[in-house]
Image (cartoon, rainbow, N blue to C red; front, side):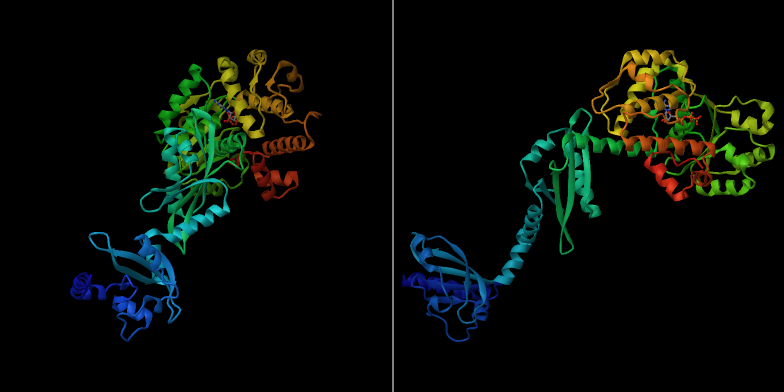
Length: 537
Ligand SMILES: Nc1ncnc2c1ncn2[C@@H]1O[C@H](COP(=O)(O)OP(=O)(O)OP(=O)(O)O)[C@@H](O)[C@H]1O
Protein backbone atom coordinates (compact mmCIF):
# COMPACT_ATOMS: atom_id res chain seq x y z
CA UNK A 1 0.00 0.00 0.00
CA UNK A 2 2.81 2.26 0.96
CA UNK A 3 4.41 1.46 -2.40
CA UNK A 4 1.24 2.33 -4.22
CA UNK A 5 1.04 5.70 -2.50
CA UNK A 6 4.69 6.31 -3.38
CA UNK A 7 4.05 5.59 -7.02
CA UNK A 8 1.05 7.88 -6.87
CA UNK A 9 3.17 10.51 -5.25
CA UNK A 10 5.73 10.12 -8.02
CA UNK A 11 3.11 10.46 -10.68
CA UNK A 12 1.74 13.51 -8.94
CA UNK A 13 5.21 14.99 -8.65
CA UNK A 14 5.84 14.51 -12.30
CA UNK A 15 2.40 15.72 -13.30
CA UNK A 16 2.10 18.45 -10.76
CA UNK A 17 2.70 21.22 -13.26
CA UNK A 18 -0.23 19.80 -15.26
CA UNK A 19 -2.60 19.46 -12.34
CA UNK A 20 -1.40 22.76 -11.03
CA UNK A 21 -2.64 24.59 -14.06
CA UNK A 22 -5.98 22.82 -14.33
CA UNK A 23 -8.87 25.28 -14.52
CA UNK A 24 -10.69 23.38 -11.79
CA UNK A 25 -9.73 22.37 -8.25
CA UNK A 26 -8.22 18.91 -7.77
CA UNK A 27 -7.79 17.12 -4.44
CA UNK A 28 -6.55 13.58 -3.84
CA UNK A 29 -7.44 11.89 -0.57
CA UNK A 30 -6.55 8.45 0.70
CA UNK A 31 -9.10 5.95 1.84
CA UNK A 32 -8.94 7.46 5.35
CA UNK A 33 -10.11 10.81 3.96
CA UNK A 34 -6.70 12.42 4.48
CA UNK A 35 -5.55 14.87 1.83
CA UNK A 36 -2.57 13.68 -0.28
CA UNK A 37 -2.60 16.39 -2.90
CA UNK A 38 -4.26 19.71 -3.70
CA UNK A 39 -3.62 21.77 -6.79
CA UNK A 40 -3.31 25.55 -6.99
CA UNK A 41 -6.94 26.27 -7.96
CA UNK A 42 -8.18 24.23 -4.99
CA UNK A 43 -5.78 26.10 -2.69
CA UNK A 44 -7.30 29.37 -3.85
CA UNK A 45 -10.82 28.10 -3.53
CA UNK A 46 -10.32 26.98 0.05
CA UNK A 47 -8.25 30.03 1.00
CA UNK A 48 -5.63 27.62 2.30
CA UNK A 49 -2.11 28.85 2.37
CA UNK A 50 -0.75 26.67 5.16
CA UNK A 51 0.17 22.97 5.15
CA UNK A 52 -2.75 20.91 3.97
CA UNK A 53 -1.31 17.45 3.51
CA UNK A 54 -2.80 14.83 5.81
CA UNK A 55 -5.61 17.17 6.85
CA UNK A 56 -9.01 15.44 6.84
CA UNK A 57 -11.33 16.31 4.00
CA UNK A 58 -14.05 16.94 6.60
CA UNK A 59 -12.15 20.08 7.53
CA UNK A 60 -12.81 21.47 4.05
CA UNK A 61 -16.44 20.65 3.32
CA UNK A 62 -19.47 20.93 5.51
CA UNK A 63 -20.65 17.46 4.42
CA UNK A 64 -18.06 15.62 2.34
CA UNK A 65 -19.68 12.71 0.52
CA UNK A 66 -16.89 10.14 0.75
CA UNK A 67 -18.72 7.31 2.52
CA UNK A 68 -20.81 6.18 -0.49
CA UNK A 69 -17.80 6.39 -2.79
CA UNK A 70 -15.77 4.21 -0.48
CA UNK A 71 -18.56 1.67 -0.02
CA UNK A 72 -20.04 1.53 -3.50
CA UNK A 73 -16.93 2.39 -5.56
CA UNK A 74 -18.84 4.67 -7.88
CA UNK A 75 -18.56 8.36 -8.46
CA UNK A 76 -20.77 11.00 -6.97
CA UNK A 77 -21.39 14.49 -8.20
CA UNK A 78 -22.80 16.81 -5.64
CA UNK A 79 -23.26 20.33 -4.50
CA UNK A 80 -20.96 21.22 -1.54
CA UNK A 81 -20.28 24.20 0.66
CA UNK A 82 -16.70 25.10 1.63
CA UNK A 83 -16.56 25.34 5.44
CA UNK A 84 -14.02 28.15 5.67
CA UNK A 85 -15.68 30.69 3.36
CA UNK A 86 -19.18 29.34 2.58
CA UNK A 87 -18.51 29.22 -1.20
CA UNK A 88 -20.85 27.03 -3.25
CA UNK A 89 -19.09 24.42 -5.34
CA UNK A 90 -19.89 21.46 -7.53
CA UNK A 91 -17.83 18.47 -6.45
CA UNK A 92 -17.22 15.21 -8.20
CA UNK A 93 -15.90 12.34 -6.06
CA UNK A 94 -14.39 9.45 -8.04
CA UNK A 95 -12.94 6.28 -6.52
CA UNK A 96 -9.26 5.65 -7.26
CA UNK A 97 -8.88 1.88 -7.56
CA UNK A 98 -5.94 -0.50 -7.87
CA UNK A 99 -5.74 -3.00 -10.71
CA UNK A 100 -7.28 -5.54 -8.37
CA UNK A 101 -10.20 -3.21 -7.72
CA UNK A 102 -9.00 -2.27 -4.25
CA UNK A 103 -9.85 1.28 -3.17
CA UNK A 104 -6.71 3.38 -2.87
CA UNK A 105 -8.21 6.78 -2.46
CA UNK A 106 -10.63 9.33 -3.90
CA UNK A 107 -10.09 11.93 -6.58
CA UNK A 108 -12.11 15.06 -5.94
CA UNK A 109 -12.73 17.64 -8.67
CA UNK A 110 -14.15 20.94 -7.50
CA UNK A 111 -15.59 23.79 -9.42
CA UNK A 112 -17.25 26.97 -8.23
CA UNK A 113 -20.97 26.91 -8.98
CA UNK A 114 -20.77 30.03 -11.12
CA UNK A 115 -18.11 28.74 -13.50
CA UNK A 116 -19.76 25.32 -13.53
CA UNK A 117 -22.99 26.95 -14.66
CA UNK A 118 -21.19 28.84 -17.39
CA UNK A 119 -19.42 25.74 -18.62
CA UNK A 120 -22.53 23.58 -18.56
CA UNK A 121 -24.49 26.33 -20.29
CA UNK A 122 -21.88 26.40 -22.96
CA UNK A 123 -21.74 22.67 -23.41
CA UNK A 124 -25.36 21.74 -23.02
CA UNK A 125 -27.23 24.96 -23.63
CA UNK A 126 -28.90 24.87 -20.28
CA UNK A 127 -30.40 28.26 -21.11
CA UNK A 128 -32.00 26.73 -24.13
CA UNK A 129 -33.69 24.15 -21.98
CA UNK A 130 -34.87 26.84 -19.64
CA UNK A 131 -36.23 28.76 -22.60
CA UNK A 132 -37.95 25.70 -23.95
CA UNK A 133 -39.45 24.84 -20.63
CA UNK A 134 -40.74 28.35 -20.29
CA UNK A 135 -42.29 28.18 -23.74
CA UNK A 136 -43.86 24.86 -22.91
CA UNK A 137 -45.31 26.22 -19.75
CA UNK A 138 -46.96 28.93 -21.77
CA UNK A 139 -48.49 26.52 -24.21
CA UNK A 140 -50.37 23.29 -24.21
CA UNK A 141 -50.04 22.90 -27.93
CA UNK A 142 -48.26 20.14 -29.72
CA UNK A 143 -44.76 21.24 -30.37
CA UNK A 144 -41.30 20.53 -31.57
CA UNK A 145 -38.05 22.45 -31.41
CA UNK A 146 -35.48 22.98 -34.07
CA UNK A 147 -32.00 24.34 -33.37
CA UNK A 148 -30.67 27.28 -35.26
CA UNK A 149 -27.32 25.85 -36.29
CA UNK A 150 -27.84 22.34 -37.52
CA UNK A 151 -31.56 22.13 -38.01
CA UNK A 152 -31.72 19.15 -35.73
CA UNK A 153 -34.87 18.15 -33.94
CA UNK A 154 -34.13 18.70 -30.33
CA UNK A 155 -37.50 17.81 -28.94
CA UNK A 156 -40.15 16.32 -31.12
CA UNK A 157 -43.46 15.44 -29.68
CA UNK A 158 -44.66 12.12 -31.15
CA UNK A 159 -47.54 13.86 -32.92
CA UNK A 160 -45.09 15.50 -35.26
CA UNK A 161 -44.13 12.24 -36.86
CA UNK A 162 -47.75 11.78 -37.82
CA UNK A 163 -47.95 15.33 -39.12
CA UNK A 164 -44.90 14.96 -41.25
CA UNK A 165 -46.34 11.78 -42.68
CA UNK A 166 -49.38 13.66 -43.89
CA UNK A 167 -47.70 14.26 -47.18
CA UNK A 168 -44.22 14.29 -48.66
CA UNK A 169 -44.43 18.09 -48.83
CA UNK A 170 -45.35 18.56 -45.19
CA UNK A 171 -41.86 17.84 -43.92
CA UNK A 172 -40.23 20.31 -46.32
CA UNK A 173 -42.86 22.90 -45.64
CA UNK A 174 -42.54 22.67 -41.87
CA UNK A 175 -38.75 22.98 -42.13
CA UNK A 176 -39.10 26.02 -44.34
CA UNK A 177 -41.43 27.71 -41.89
CA UNK A 178 -38.93 27.20 -39.08
CA UNK A 179 -36.18 28.65 -41.23
CA UNK A 180 -38.24 31.71 -42.16
CA UNK A 181 -39.28 32.29 -38.55
CA UNK A 182 -35.63 32.17 -37.50
CA UNK A 183 -34.43 34.37 -40.34
CA UNK A 184 -37.08 37.02 -39.81
CA UNK A 185 -37.18 36.53 -36.03
CA UNK A 186 -40.93 36.72 -36.29
CA UNK A 187 -43.76 34.46 -35.23
CA UNK A 188 -45.21 32.87 -38.34
CA UNK A 189 -48.64 31.31 -38.54
CA UNK A 190 -49.40 29.30 -41.62
CA UNK A 191 -52.01 26.82 -42.64
CA UNK A 192 -50.84 23.84 -44.57
CA UNK A 193 -53.06 22.28 -47.13
CA UNK A 194 -52.41 19.30 -49.28
CA UNK A 195 -54.64 19.22 -52.33
CA UNK A 196 -54.84 15.48 -52.21
CA UNK A 197 -55.89 15.33 -48.61
CA UNK A 198 -58.56 17.92 -48.08
CA UNK A 199 -59.04 17.14 -44.41
CA UNK A 200 -55.39 17.61 -43.62
CA UNK A 201 -55.23 21.33 -43.15
CA UNK A 202 -53.19 22.30 -40.17
CA UNK A 203 -52.08 25.54 -38.66
CA UNK A 204 -48.49 25.67 -37.58
CA UNK A 205 -47.11 28.43 -35.46
CA UNK A 206 -43.38 28.85 -35.74
CA UNK A 207 -41.87 30.89 -32.95
CA UNK A 208 -38.21 31.86 -32.85
CA UNK A 209 -36.56 31.26 -29.47
CA UNK A 210 -34.29 34.07 -28.40
CA UNK A 211 -32.45 34.19 -25.13
CA UNK A 212 -30.81 37.44 -24.16
CA UNK A 213 -31.17 38.57 -27.76
CA UNK A 214 -29.38 35.50 -29.10
CA UNK A 215 -31.31 33.33 -31.53
CA UNK A 216 -31.26 29.77 -30.27
CA UNK A 217 -33.78 28.00 -32.44
CA UNK A 218 -37.42 27.74 -33.23
CA UNK A 219 -40.40 26.14 -31.59
CA UNK A 220 -43.17 24.90 -33.77
CA UNK A 221 -46.62 24.33 -32.41
CA UNK A 222 -49.44 22.53 -34.07
CA UNK A 223 -52.49 24.57 -33.39
CA UNK A 224 -55.35 22.17 -32.97
CA UNK A 225 -56.87 23.66 -29.88
CA UNK A 226 -58.14 26.88 -31.40
CA UNK A 227 -59.15 25.79 -34.84
CA UNK A 228 -61.32 22.87 -35.65
CA UNK A 229 -61.07 21.34 -39.08
CA UNK A 230 -63.75 23.39 -40.77
CA UNK A 231 -62.37 26.59 -39.31
CA UNK A 232 -59.00 25.65 -40.66
CA UNK A 233 -60.52 25.13 -44.06
CA UNK A 234 -62.24 28.45 -43.78
CA UNK A 235 -59.02 30.18 -42.89
CA UNK A 236 -57.37 28.56 -45.83
CA UNK A 237 -60.19 29.53 -48.14
CA UNK A 238 -59.98 33.12 -46.94
CA UNK A 239 -56.31 33.10 -47.72
CA UNK A 240 -57.04 31.95 -51.25
CA UNK A 241 -59.66 34.64 -51.60
CA UNK A 242 -57.25 37.31 -50.44
CA UNK A 243 -54.76 36.05 -52.98
CA UNK A 244 -57.32 36.02 -55.74
CA UNK A 245 -58.48 39.47 -54.88
CA UNK A 246 -55.05 40.82 -55.51
CA UNK A 247 -54.65 39.38 -58.93
CA UNK A 248 -56.17 37.08 -61.50
CA UNK A 249 -54.24 34.18 -62.95
CA UNK A 250 -54.84 32.42 -66.24
CA UNK A 251 -56.53 29.50 -64.47
CA UNK A 252 -59.14 31.87 -63.07
CA UNK A 253 -60.60 32.23 -66.54
CA UNK A 254 -63.18 29.49 -66.48
CA UNK A 255 -64.43 27.85 -69.63
CA UNK A 256 -63.54 25.15 -72.12
CA UNK A 257 -65.43 26.39 -75.16
CA UNK A 258 -63.26 26.96 -78.27
CA UNK A 259 -63.70 30.76 -78.16
CA UNK A 260 -62.51 30.99 -74.56
CA UNK A 261 -59.59 28.64 -75.27
CA UNK A 262 -58.50 30.88 -78.14
CA UNK A 263 -58.79 33.97 -75.92
CA UNK A 264 -56.63 32.29 -73.28
CA UNK A 265 -53.94 31.40 -75.82
CA UNK A 266 -53.98 34.93 -77.26
CA UNK A 267 -53.63 36.33 -73.75
CA UNK A 268 -50.52 34.22 -73.17
CA UNK A 269 -49.03 35.35 -76.46
CA UNK A 270 -49.82 39.05 -76.06
CA UNK A 271 -48.54 39.04 -72.50
CA UNK A 272 -45.06 38.66 -73.95
CA UNK A 273 -45.48 41.66 -76.22
CA UNK A 274 -45.43 45.37 -75.41
CA UNK A 275 -47.96 46.42 -77.99
CA UNK A 276 -51.38 47.88 -77.09
CA UNK A 277 -54.22 45.41 -77.35
CA UNK A 278 -57.97 45.61 -77.46
CA UNK A 279 -60.25 43.21 -75.65
CA UNK A 280 -63.73 43.08 -77.07
CA UNK A 281 -66.80 41.45 -75.66
CA UNK A 282 -70.24 42.23 -74.30
CA UNK A 283 -70.60 43.65 -70.80
CA UNK A 284 -69.61 41.21 -68.07
CA UNK A 285 -67.79 38.77 -70.36
CA UNK A 286 -64.53 39.15 -68.43
CA UNK A 287 -62.59 41.85 -70.34
CA UNK A 288 -61.26 43.51 -67.22
CA UNK A 289 -60.43 40.10 -65.75
CA UNK A 290 -58.54 39.11 -68.89
CA UNK A 291 -56.64 42.41 -68.86
CA UNK A 292 -55.51 41.61 -65.31
CA UNK A 293 -54.49 38.12 -66.38
CA UNK A 294 -52.36 39.55 -69.18
CA UNK A 295 -50.78 41.89 -66.67
CA UNK A 296 -50.00 38.99 -64.29
CA UNK A 297 -48.56 36.92 -67.11
CA UNK A 298 -46.34 39.73 -68.34
CA UNK A 299 -43.06 40.96 -66.95
CA UNK A 300 -44.99 43.85 -65.45
CA UNK A 301 -46.81 41.65 -62.96
CA UNK A 302 -45.11 43.21 -59.94
CA UNK A 303 -45.87 46.77 -61.06
CA UNK A 304 -49.20 48.65 -60.84
CA UNK A 305 -52.32 47.80 -62.79
CA UNK A 306 -54.54 50.86 -63.24
CA UNK A 307 -57.99 51.21 -64.76
CA UNK A 308 -59.29 54.32 -66.46
CA UNK A 309 -62.70 54.77 -68.07
CA UNK A 310 -63.10 56.83 -71.23
CA UNK A 311 -66.19 58.45 -69.68
CA UNK A 312 -63.89 59.88 -67.00
CA UNK A 313 -61.43 61.16 -69.59
CA UNK A 314 -64.25 62.66 -71.67
CA UNK A 315 -65.53 64.57 -68.65
CA UNK A 316 -62.15 66.05 -67.74
CA UNK A 317 -61.19 69.61 -68.58
CA UNK A 318 -57.56 68.93 -67.97
CA UNK A 319 -56.64 65.63 -69.60
CA UNK A 320 -52.91 66.33 -69.37
CA UNK A 321 -52.86 66.20 -65.58
CA UNK A 322 -54.70 62.89 -65.61
CA UNK A 323 -52.31 61.41 -68.17
CA UNK A 324 -49.32 62.66 -66.21
CA UNK A 325 -50.78 60.99 -63.16
CA UNK A 326 -51.16 57.72 -65.08
CA UNK A 327 -47.58 57.98 -66.32
CA UNK A 328 -46.30 58.51 -62.82
CA UNK A 329 -48.42 55.97 -60.94
CA UNK A 330 -48.50 53.32 -63.59
CA UNK A 331 -44.76 53.32 -64.21
CA UNK A 332 -43.60 49.95 -65.57
CA UNK A 333 -47.10 48.62 -65.14
CA UNK A 334 -50.30 48.29 -67.15
CA UNK A 335 -53.12 50.77 -67.76
CA UNK A 336 -56.51 49.37 -68.73
CA UNK A 337 -58.56 51.95 -70.67
CA UNK A 338 -62.22 51.04 -70.70
CA UNK A 339 -63.82 52.49 -73.82
CA UNK A 340 -67.33 53.06 -72.56
CA UNK A 341 -67.98 56.17 -74.59
CA UNK A 342 -66.57 58.16 -77.46
CA UNK A 343 -63.71 60.51 -76.79
CA UNK A 344 -63.48 63.95 -78.48
CA UNK A 345 -60.87 64.02 -81.23
CA UNK A 346 -58.39 66.28 -79.43
CA UNK A 347 -58.44 63.93 -76.48
CA UNK A 348 -57.95 60.94 -78.76
CA UNK A 349 -54.81 62.65 -80.04
CA UNK A 350 -53.49 63.22 -76.55
CA UNK A 351 -54.17 59.63 -75.69
CA UNK A 352 -52.42 58.48 -78.82
CA UNK A 353 -49.42 60.53 -77.76
CA UNK A 354 -49.60 59.00 -74.29
CA UNK A 355 -49.61 55.46 -75.71
CA UNK A 356 -46.74 56.18 -78.10
CA UNK A 357 -44.59 57.89 -75.48
CA UNK A 358 -45.46 55.98 -72.34
CA UNK A 359 -42.33 53.92 -72.38
CA UNK A 360 -42.59 51.08 -69.96
CA UNK A 361 -46.35 51.28 -69.58
CA UNK A 362 -48.41 48.59 -71.24
CA UNK A 363 -51.80 49.77 -72.50
CA UNK A 364 -54.82 47.50 -72.80
CA UNK A 365 -58.13 48.73 -74.14
CA UNK A 366 -61.42 47.03 -73.42
CA UNK A 367 -64.83 47.68 -74.84
CA UNK A 368 -68.31 46.29 -75.27
CA UNK A 369 -69.11 48.95 -77.85
CA UNK A 370 -69.18 48.21 -81.54
CA UNK A 371 -66.30 50.45 -82.60
CA UNK A 372 -66.69 51.93 -86.03
CA UNK A 373 -64.05 53.98 -87.75
CA UNK A 374 -66.31 56.98 -88.36
CA UNK A 375 -66.22 57.97 -84.66
CA UNK A 376 -62.50 57.72 -84.26
CA UNK A 377 -59.46 59.47 -85.55
CA UNK A 378 -57.84 57.33 -88.17
CA UNK A 379 -54.50 56.81 -86.40
CA UNK A 380 -56.10 56.22 -83.02
CA UNK A 381 -58.53 53.73 -84.53
CA UNK A 382 -55.65 52.02 -86.21
CA UNK A 383 -53.73 51.78 -82.95
CA UNK A 384 -56.49 50.21 -80.93
CA UNK A 385 -57.56 47.78 -83.64
CA UNK A 386 -54.17 46.26 -84.21
CA UNK A 387 -54.20 43.37 -81.77
CA UNK A 388 -57.55 42.11 -80.59
CA UNK A 389 -58.96 39.44 -78.36
CA UNK A 390 -62.69 38.75 -78.45
CA UNK A 391 -64.45 37.22 -75.49
CA UNK A 392 -67.58 35.21 -76.25
CA UNK A 393 -70.96 36.09 -74.83
CA UNK A 394 -72.31 33.65 -72.28
CA UNK A 395 -75.20 32.67 -74.52
CA UNK A 396 -72.64 31.56 -77.10
CA UNK A 397 -70.88 29.23 -74.72
CA UNK A 398 -73.67 27.50 -72.93
CA UNK A 399 -71.63 24.34 -72.44
CA UNK A 400 -69.46 26.27 -70.00
CA UNK A 401 -72.47 26.96 -67.78
CA UNK A 402 -71.92 23.96 -65.46
CA UNK A 403 -68.27 24.78 -64.96
CA UNK A 404 -68.94 28.47 -64.41
CA UNK A 405 -71.76 27.83 -61.94
CA UNK A 406 -69.63 25.39 -59.95
CA UNK A 407 -66.71 27.80 -59.75
CA UNK A 408 -68.77 30.86 -58.96
CA UNK A 409 -70.74 28.96 -56.31
CA UNK A 410 -67.54 27.82 -54.61
CA UNK A 411 -66.27 31.40 -54.63
CA UNK A 412 -69.54 32.70 -53.13
CA UNK A 413 -69.58 29.94 -50.52
CA UNK A 414 -66.18 31.10 -49.36
CA UNK A 415 -67.21 34.72 -49.43
CA UNK A 416 -70.43 34.28 -47.46
CA UNK A 417 -69.41 31.27 -45.37
CA UNK A 418 -72.22 29.18 -46.86
CA UNK A 419 -72.07 25.48 -47.69
CA UNK A 420 -74.32 25.11 -50.71
CA UNK A 421 -72.96 22.09 -52.53
CA UNK A 422 -74.57 22.52 -55.95
CA UNK A 423 -77.09 24.14 -58.23
CA UNK A 424 -79.74 21.72 -59.43
CA UNK A 425 -79.22 20.60 -63.04
CA UNK A 426 -82.78 21.70 -63.88
CA UNK A 427 -81.79 25.23 -62.91
CA UNK A 428 -78.69 25.08 -65.05
CA UNK A 429 -80.66 23.71 -68.00
CA UNK A 430 -83.06 26.60 -67.58
CA UNK A 431 -80.23 29.08 -67.40
CA UNK A 432 -78.75 27.65 -70.59
CA UNK A 433 -81.88 28.82 -72.36
CA UNK A 434 -81.59 32.39 -71.03
CA UNK A 435 -79.94 35.25 -72.90
CA UNK A 436 -77.76 36.66 -70.12
CA UNK A 437 -77.20 40.13 -71.56
CA UNK A 438 -74.97 40.91 -68.58
CA UNK A 439 -73.04 37.67 -69.18
CA UNK A 440 -70.87 36.20 -66.40
CA UNK A 441 -71.26 39.29 -64.24
CA UNK A 442 -75.00 38.75 -64.39
CA UNK A 443 -74.70 35.04 -63.69
CA UNK A 444 -72.50 35.83 -60.72
CA UNK A 445 -74.95 38.43 -59.50
CA UNK A 446 -77.87 36.02 -59.81
CA UNK A 447 -76.02 33.31 -57.93
CA UNK A 448 -74.98 35.79 -55.27
CA UNK A 449 -78.60 36.72 -54.63
CA UNK A 450 -79.54 33.04 -54.35
CA UNK A 451 -76.71 32.40 -51.94
CA UNK A 452 -77.67 35.40 -49.84
CA UNK A 453 -81.24 34.15 -49.67
CA UNK A 454 -80.20 30.70 -48.51
CA UNK A 455 -80.16 29.59 -44.89
CA UNK A 456 -77.93 27.15 -43.07
CA UNK A 457 -80.11 24.21 -44.16
CA UNK A 458 -79.80 25.01 -47.87
CA UNK A 459 -77.72 22.33 -49.50
CA UNK A 460 -78.52 22.96 -53.12
CA UNK A 461 -80.22 25.59 -55.23
CA UNK A 462 -83.39 24.27 -56.81
CA UNK A 463 -85.74 25.71 -59.36
CA UNK A 464 -88.38 26.87 -56.88
CA UNK A 465 -85.83 29.27 -55.37
CA UNK A 466 -85.51 31.06 -58.68
CA UNK A 467 -88.78 32.91 -58.28
CA UNK A 468 -87.11 35.14 -55.72
CA UNK A 469 -84.47 36.22 -58.19
CA UNK A 470 -85.12 37.91 -61.47
CA UNK A 471 -82.57 37.74 -64.20
CA UNK A 472 -82.28 41.45 -64.75
CA UNK A 473 -79.00 42.55 -66.16
CA UNK A 474 -78.00 44.65 -63.23
CA UNK A 475 -79.83 43.30 -60.34
CA UNK A 476 -78.84 46.02 -57.97
CA UNK A 477 -82.29 47.02 -56.86
CA UNK A 478 -83.13 45.77 -53.44
CA UNK A 479 -86.04 43.36 -53.06
CA UNK A 480 -87.23 42.79 -49.51
CA UNK A 481 -86.75 39.19 -48.53
CA UNK A 482 -87.71 37.91 -45.13
CA UNK A 483 -85.29 34.97 -45.38
CA UNK A 484 -82.34 37.31 -44.87
CA UNK A 485 -81.13 38.35 -41.47
CA UNK A 486 -81.45 42.08 -40.92
CA UNK A 487 -77.69 42.57 -41.05
CA UNK A 488 -77.31 40.58 -44.29
CA UNK A 489 -80.16 42.52 -45.87
CA UNK A 490 -78.62 45.83 -44.79
CA UNK A 491 -75.20 44.78 -46.10
CA UNK A 492 -76.68 43.62 -49.39
CA UNK A 493 -78.57 46.86 -49.80
CA UNK A 494 -75.55 48.95 -48.90
CA UNK A 495 -73.29 47.09 -51.33
CA UNK A 496 -75.79 47.40 -54.20
CA UNK A 497 -76.41 51.04 -53.43
CA UNK A 498 -72.69 51.84 -53.48
CA UNK A 499 -72.24 49.90 -56.74
CA UNK A 500 -75.07 51.84 -58.32
CA UNK A 501 -73.66 55.18 -57.15
CA UNK A 502 -70.20 54.24 -58.43
CA UNK A 503 -71.59 53.36 -61.83
CA UNK A 504 -73.66 56.53 -62.00
CA UNK A 505 -70.55 58.54 -61.20
CA UNK A 506 -68.33 56.65 -63.64
CA UNK A 507 -66.33 55.24 -60.71
CA UNK A 508 -65.21 58.68 -59.65
CA UNK A 509 -64.75 58.17 -55.91
CA UNK A 510 -64.97 61.83 -54.95
CA UNK A 511 -68.22 62.29 -56.83
CA UNK A 512 -69.59 58.99 -55.56
CA UNK A 513 -68.74 59.81 -51.96
CA UNK A 514 -70.40 63.21 -52.37
CA UNK A 515 -73.54 61.73 -53.88
CA UNK A 516 -73.75 59.23 -51.04
CA UNK A 517 -73.07 61.89 -48.41
CA UNK A 518 -70.02 60.11 -46.97
CA UNK A 519 -66.33 60.92 -46.87
CA UNK A 520 -64.03 59.46 -49.55
CA UNK A 521 -62.23 57.58 -46.81
CA UNK A 522 -65.47 56.07 -45.61
CA UNK A 523 -66.34 55.12 -49.18
CA UNK A 524 -63.02 53.31 -49.58
CA UNK A 525 -63.60 51.55 -46.29
CA UNK A 526 -67.02 50.33 -47.46
CA UNK A 527 -65.65 49.31 -50.86
CA UNK A 528 -63.01 47.20 -49.15
CA UNK A 529 -65.63 45.75 -46.83
CA UNK A 530 -67.81 44.68 -49.74
CA UNK A 531 -64.84 43.69 -51.86
CA UNK A 532 -65.65 46.24 -54.54
CA UNK A 533 -62.63 46.62 -56.78
CA UNK A 534 -60.71 49.80 -55.99
CA UNK A 535 -58.93 49.86 -59.32
CA UNK A 536 -61.44 51.99 -61.15
CA UNK A 537 -60.44 55.65 -61.06
N1 LIG B 1 -64.10 33.34 -67.76
C1 LIG B 1 -64.46 33.70 -66.52
N2 LIG B 1 -64.34 32.82 -65.52
C2 LIG B 1 -64.71 33.16 -64.28
N3 LIG B 1 -65.21 34.34 -63.93
C3 LIG B 1 -65.35 35.25 -64.89
C4 LIG B 1 -64.97 34.99 -66.22
N4 LIG B 1 -65.21 36.07 -66.94
C5 LIG B 1 -65.73 36.98 -66.10
N5 LIG B 1 -65.79 36.49 -64.86
C6 LIG B 1 -66.32 37.19 -63.69
O1 LIG B 1 -67.38 37.99 -64.13
C7 LIG B 1 -67.36 39.27 -63.54
C8 LIG B 1 -67.32 40.35 -64.59
O2 LIG B 1 -66.05 40.32 -65.23
P1 LIG B 1 -65.36 41.61 -65.79
O3 LIG B 1 -65.60 42.78 -64.90
O4 LIG B 1 -63.98 41.27 -66.13
O5 LIG B 1 -66.21 41.83 -67.11
P2 LIG B 1 -66.11 43.00 -68.17
O6 LIG B 1 -66.28 42.35 -69.49
O7 LIG B 1 -64.86 43.78 -67.96
O8 LIG B 1 -67.38 43.84 -67.76
P3 LIG B 1 -67.79 45.36 -68.19
O9 LIG B 1 -67.80 45.42 -69.67
O10 LIG B 1 -69.13 45.52 -67.58
O11 LIG B 1 -66.74 46.23 -67.56
C9 LIG B 1 -66.17 39.30 -62.63
O12 LIG B 1 -66.57 39.05 -61.30
C10 LIG B 1 -65.31 38.16 -63.12
O13 LIG B 1 -64.62 37.60 -62.05
